Length: 252
Image 1 (spheres, rainbow, N blue to C red):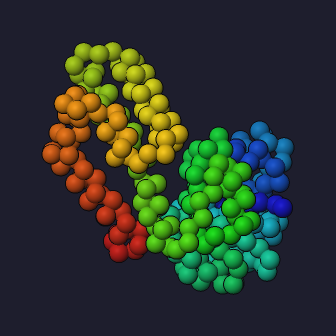
Image 2: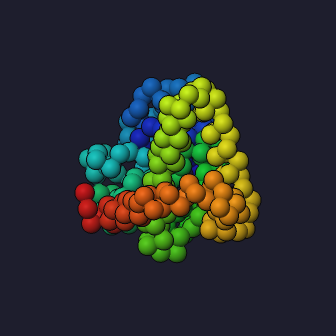
Image 3: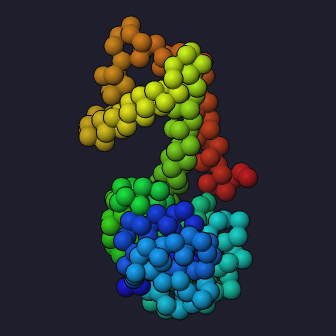
């Protein structure tokens, strides 16, 4: 099976990396990235144009930005028997089918950059055996029974920047108090990496894990209590609500 990519940016590169570059056809969009992948992986070819990707692929992955998606997709001529995988954010299947102009299987997916190391948990909708097999090669496919489930996981995927923002804030505070910048970064990165491993390995819910890592009357308990009392949890909940509105197309 030949896998074709329309758009060759960060996510396409991560997927190609994780797949080991076998039987992959790239569009010339993102020429520098495409050329780099073709140099590294003998099984990666760069097509003459986007239509050549469609013509030469069995499964087509759409990785273009939402702002240009319609302009890129609408002129392309797909064919019967192809499967389309869209990783375009907040873009409905009905819109994609209208642009494609052909009744093909269209599956939405939310791969993460960790696909490069085969560690991405990737929601897909609707469930599809072939597409699930693709993303299981890149980590773990997470089929969603409904679009509501998929949308909620899309909101969850928007927490990546906030994760690093929390680390950035904590590092900045430590440095302002006199700690060496490198020491602050090393300590926080190690701390949060280990906490992530605990979250993955433990069957306990997050509230239980928080309690287990917070001695009653201790410093960890105090930080979270002050964070919540200062509006931190409310601000996060409000931000998640607003992102969900955007994902559902209810806000800009």
